[in-house]
Structure formats: C-alpha cells, structure tokens
Length: 188
Image 1 (cartoon, one colour):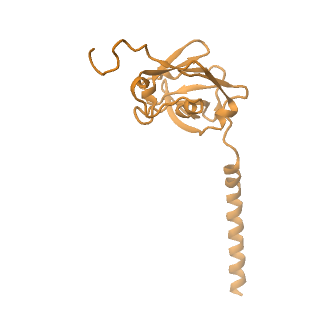
Image 2 (cartoon, one colour):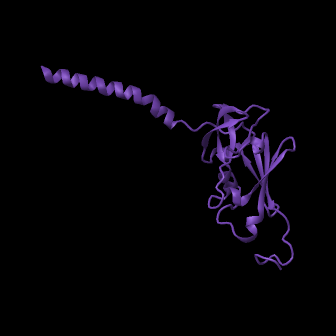
Image 3 (cartoon, one colour):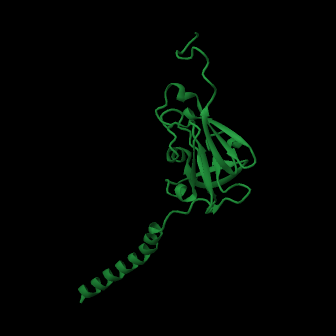
C-alpha cells in the first residue's frame, strides 16, 4: 500500500514541477523584445564615403544587451545593441586598429543636429573597449519620441553629455588629414 502512495506523490510532484517550468520555457522560446519601432533606420556612413542603412529588422538580429545607468541623478534600465555590433554589421572594422586607422573618429548625429564623437580606438575591444549601447528601450518600454527611437548610452562617461537622443546616423571618418612627413612617429 505504501508504494502506490509514493508513486502518486511522485506523479503529483512531477506535475507541479512541469506546471511551474512551462511558463519559463514559453518565455525562453519567445523572441527577444523587438528593437525600435518598425520603420526605424540607422544610417552608417563609412570612411570611404559609402553608406549602409540598417533597418529595425537588421538591428533586431544583432545581440542585445541591457545596462543599468544613471542619467542626471535618475536610475534607468536600458536595452539595445552594443555599438561595436552595429559597426560590425555595417562593415566598419574597429578591432586590431593600427597606423592611420587610429586617427579615425565616429561621429554620432541626432535628428536635431547635435553631434558627439568617439575615437575609433576608444571603442575598439582591444584598446579602449568603451561600452556604448544603441538603446531602443528604457525601463522595459520603447523609447518615446523625445528620446528615440534610438539613442546612445555611454555608462562609463562621468556625465551624460554623449548620451545622444534621437540617433539618426553614425559617420566614420579620418580625424584630420595626415600632415606631410607623417609616416614616422616623431618630428620630421
């Protein structure tokens, strides 16, 4: 008589565990939160002058990250795509930089004309490794029109001056033309 009770208790425990695990399995099977609003695009102008337009679907296919950061004294939880992955998707090389490539800058442009700059070496994973997020969500919700649909989050900066809102374009270009006799690393 004891055996059937144990078996029944075991079946009951298994049923309870399955019922608890099912919602978690369904949540894990669901696709990640969609990036930005449909119709969102991000233009990346490469150093050679050509441009790549990344769509919301292309941005959505990139690895997503989340970061907790403080902006003007307010804590927030941001989600989006690492800038490194956006650059890679657009064909911009930012690792193992050498020579003239170390004088390359990335200028991020907002809808209102505000611009911020990063040295490509600052972003390179094997040099500065600065974490920058192209965010599309704040505290679990899509960014509102005053902030998004995309914005830059730079959690390592001391103040959020480069946390650009309404990101529209990323422009990669040489910082300045090389001066004559610039082949070496010292005075001419």
